[in-house]
Length: 220
Image (cartoon, rainbow, N blue to C red):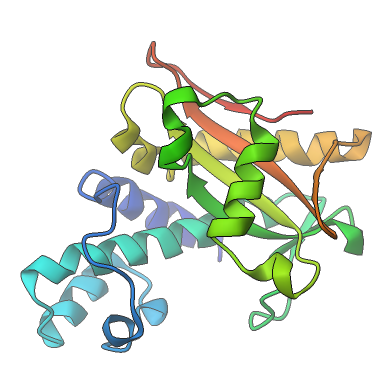
């Protein structure tokens, strides 16, 4: 991804975020995903024309828009990391073990996961509950740790004002860029990671406060 690609795609995603539902409109399954390869679609206009060409039902379109939106947001998250001096992307795009390596250190290779605060935590959510959140994510959202070491960096989006606004936080690029720069700078000083079996993990929180302020938080 180039800076020009980022600007164009990032703007599209910010526009699309206004219509993306918080929850899946239709459960992800192989039959739906096999209708066309959305991972080869790099802009919203092409997504819409492909859905029309494939005769996707109107009630199914939110599912595809949301899936494409989240996928593209994850690509930009990775880009915002690897454009920094002390981060590099995995040169093997087919390697599922890691996305970004920091400080030229193979022990600091991470799979990047964008996510939300789980519903079961929202009423009593605290930024200090990092360990409980990470344990939940590993146990419920991914099987990577069960098959061997896979470090994870969770980008946790949460609005204290209205949970639906967490979708908007997915593409608050300026704030994310600052958060990722800060994370990399703190890596040099040493960050305390959460250990899950043989993996290490950390959360970067992208937050909207109740008084309409936007910030990031990293337990250091």
